[in-house]
Length: 170
Image (cartoon, rainbow, N blue to C red; front, side):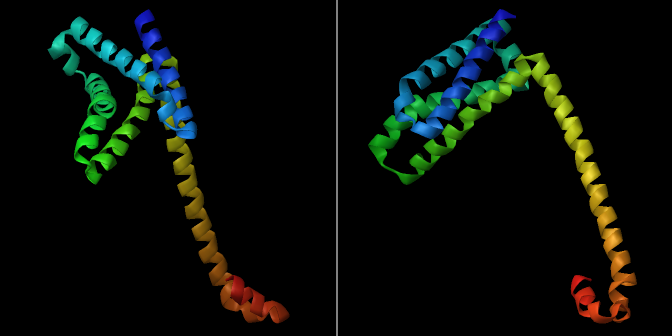
């Protein structure tokens, strides 16, 4: 629906801004980050209103969204004031850790747009098959190396002048 499309667009724009923040620093984007935080907070409250508190929190994806919105609010609106007043090193580390959670909003796009979810499922399936293929290749290489070590490496003297090289290789 159009609500999910609008939220998806905001998430995509936020992902672009997060990339720019990584390159140019966070200070220049504080106003934009506040806009995104308010937008995500409003989205969360709209979903809570539409589904009810029990309906909202009964879905794991909504709990994840609530966690992301809460950590963003903590990062932007609470921790800067607390860390400024207390000057404790662990608060600064906590602030940096909380900022990393903001990138997780991108995961929500897979839930909102069905084609992305289908592509992700296909990618995971392909990755599983490629992993099995890689394991099979390693097993075959291991078998070949044992075979060649037993047949060629143990009989290096039969290779004459190249015996030293054969012993080194096998």
